[in-house]
Image (tube, rainbow, N blue to C red; front, top):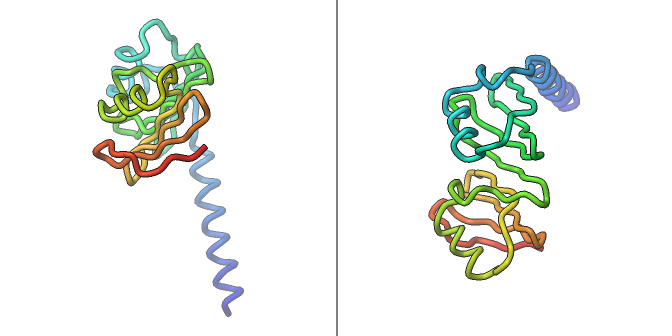
Length: 143
């Protein structure tokens, strides 16, 4: 009986995943939520949206410089992943995190930031990952 329940649960997860993935579709920037459009034009001036796609839960933008931005369907950013040589704009990094990186890692810059349930996960240019709580206090450092 346990095997049947486990098989059924795995089947349901597989079907739901397939349905969600099937509805991921390319869109133009004008079809993204207004908040996402405003975010890109405000914080990534001079960059063009190279590719965008949308599904039931989120939107994803790829910019001409290689940056990928994930948004929730209401237009709030969830993750900003710049390539190794691009910098996440200082205007989107919470002030305590920005000050921590400047004070403790001079010459380094943030190239990825992601909102998590506990706060923020931040990758900096020297390949160190920093975890911060929602107030910007350091929780953990991984290299």
